Amino acid sequence: MNWCILIPVLVGLICAILGYLLGRLFGNNNEDESDNDSSGIITKLETELAGCETQNDKYLIRIDALEAKLAACEKSKITLEARGNDDNLSISSFAAPAISAILFDGAAAKAVFGKKVKENDLTFVEGIGPKIKDLFHNHDVTTWKALSETSVERCQEILNTGGERYKVHNPGTWPRQAKLAYEGKWQELLDWQDILDGGKEV
View 1 (tube, rainbow, N blue to C red):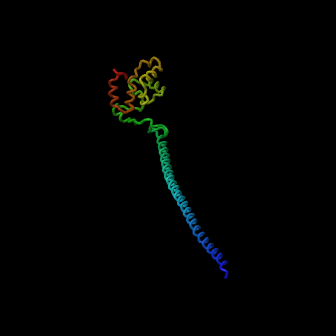
View 2 (cartoon, one colour):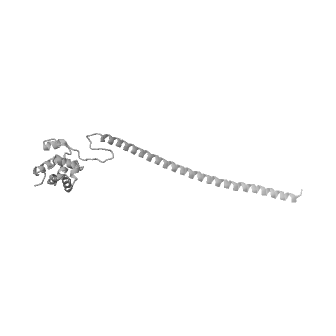
View 3 (spheres, rainbow, N blue to C red):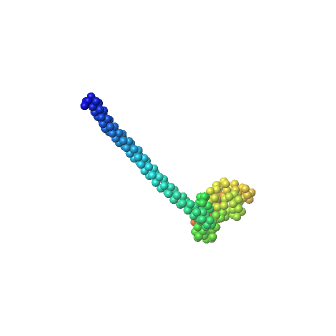
């Protein structure tokens, strides 16, 4: 046997085996790293998905709360609109604020004055008669509250528009009388009117 030929063959075989083993070794390491990278990406995506689902649940809860508030507002609107049609209440519409925060008590007024008192009757103010009442109505002063918020100077201006026969009247106490009537302070109004002279302070 020629050993010179066998030695290179054995060396080549050994190199081939070593190359194969080294290839498997480094190939497995790369696969492990790829597996690790894939696992990290999947874990990150799963975390982001869980966060999105949590945020979505929060939005759904918020939407439910807003829908409940909307339903409550619509129910209140319907109730107020229905009440606004009732002539016994002072709320004229849903959009408008309450016209009168103080309810008129005709029985209490009658108990003090001994006669029926009509709400917002300007002639109930001492010094104002039917003609002057009509004059004030023509200038959009139609309620006790409106008269109570009208200055004495404005009252005089309204009187002046009626001519000479109205200028002689003194409206100095009219807004204050109207305020007491509007607030339902009947006894205080009666006591004060008892000392007035034709609606004028003496």
